[in-house]
Structure formats: C-alpha cells, structure tokens
Length: 403
Image (cartoon, rainbow, N blue to C red; front, side):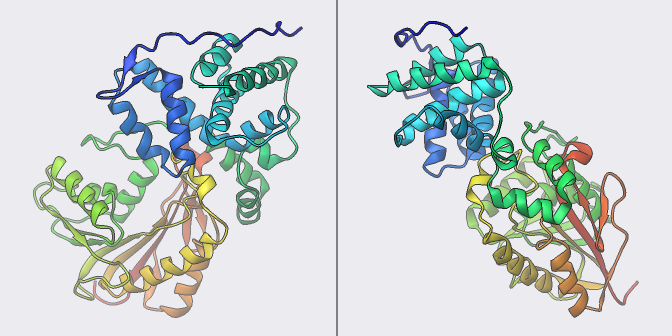
C-alpha cells in the first residue's frame, strides 16, 4: 500500500556554505552539478572543484560524488522511470532534479522519505509540486518490485550504439559484463609515489618499461601519469622522458605533476604528436597513448557515454593511425614502440594494428602482457571485468635493426 500523498515539505536549513558563495546541502550541490553537466561541464572536472569550495564533511562529500556520478551513469534508465509519469516537456533544471531523485530511489535505495523530501527541498518555484508528485509515484514503483525494462540498453543506461558496437566487437556476453562493470563506481588507486592512477594505466607504463638512462618519448602525455611512472623507475640513472601534448593547458598539467613528484627528468613539450619536433630514429622507447573514444573508462568518466558519438570512432581511428606512423619514425633501430588506448572497439585496436602490419614491415610484434590481459590480434585487451580496472588495449612492437 502506498503512503498517502501530502504537500511538498518545507525547506530545511542548509548548513554547509560554499567558500565565498551560497550555502550548500549534499543534494543541493549534486543538483547544481547535474545542471552544469547537462549544459556541457565534465563531471570529473566539475565535481572535485565544487567539493573543494564547500565545508561538507567527508561523508557528505562522498554522498555528493555518488549521487552525481551515479545519476550521470544511469541517466537513460532514470529518464525512462520518470517519463512514465510525465505528459510534458521539462526544463533542464527540473529534469536534473527528477533524475537525481530517481537515482536515489532506484539504485542507492535511500528511504523514500529522505530521497523525495530532501530532493524536493532543492527545487524552487512551481516545479516543486511536480517533482514531489513524480518522485512519490516513482517510489511506489520501486516498492512494488523489480522494474521490467524495455530493452538492454535502457536497463544498462547506455546509448544504443555503444551496446551494439561492443556486442559486435567483443561478443554479447563479454560486452554485457564490461558494461555492467563500468556501471559500478571506480576505486581510487595510489602509486607508491602518491600519484592516483588506475591499475590498468600502471600496467601499461610497467609494460613500456624504462631502462637506466634511456630516452623515452611519450607523444600524447597529458595528464602525465604514464610519463611520470616511466621517469620515476630508476632514481640513480633515470630515463629522460620527453612528454608531448598538443594542448598547452594540459601540457602545463604534465609539468606540474612531474614537479610535484620531484622528477626533473620529465620535459613537458607542447607539440602535435603527428609532427613531433624530435630527432628521428633516436628514441629507445616511444609510447603512443592515443586519444580514443574512451569506451573502456566509462565508470571513471560517467557522463562521457552521452558525449561520444558513433561517428567519433572512425575519426579517432584515423588520428590514431597518423600518430602511430609518426611515432614509428622516432624509434631507434632495436627500440620499442607501444600503442595503447583506453577503449574496447575493434576499429581503434586491432584494425589500426592491421593497417600498421600491412604497411610497416620494420615493426615486429613482441609478446603482449599476460593475464589478466587477453591476447587480441597482435596485442592484448584488458576488459574492465577481468581485474576491476579500466578497459585498455596495448600493442608492443620492436623496430628492426640495432640490438
């Protein structure tokens, strides 16, 4: 039996002020973030900045992060739950509030009185009554039992094309498991030097390796996680790492991270990796951690699934090819070229390598990393579900000649 309907609750005090700004509650801050994300802000940049300016305690900060990231991930599913109780188009602010309430009820299992009332408190004007009514009906739905979703893409809350593409490239079972894993919050992992980096990226850097005194080029380096890992391996005879990035602001981030970790052997350079200002055939190891569709890191970038488009995949594959060809010319005879991407599509992984294999006979494949990586073409794929990490592809090639 559903609870009797009542008028929207009165707003309660909001005790945690933003520095130099208005007071903030966890749901108020989460709603503000969702509205800004809907207008184009990126969650993984916006949320830490907002939290840095608030006096919320650690528990409430974690609550804000879970509500924002979770609502972004499950946006399609939340909309489907909400839209069954609507008959009109919604303003972005109202849509964001309803998504926030739906996520709390459907996935966080917050008691209805807390989820509904506290969310309604953050809505101004006549829309409060609508939000209150819809969320109460949705709470009734949740209490009645499991939802019957219209299709897998809605249930998993991904665009149709991502579900279809990964099912075709990975197989339906592996694709579904990967998508389910990326709907769970990512854990923070800290390297011994204090840098926070997912284990998958740490594995890639370890696979690239860095011998004492070697010259290493990282041609798409920002924000600098792999570059600093390579530079910090041998403190007595450190490798020289030249870290290129086309974006000046992101290149500054690379330099800042290197300085914070005490790594003067990292040189951050603003440059286009397709035309690297580096001496050809002079680098012991070259890493191409290329821009990609990012379909392996959707748990960490919750809103990215709604930004990336199917048309981006072939465009990015063409860019990856250009970067690889330019990087191959940097490798010294006997040196190593490593290509990595944090995505799972065949077009950006084995297809790029297939073209490289056909056109560059001087690049010979080396053994890929072992389990939990799975051999894929001449490289290896790390699925998110294999070790609860980001999804990655890595390919290792040795240039003919030399040692």
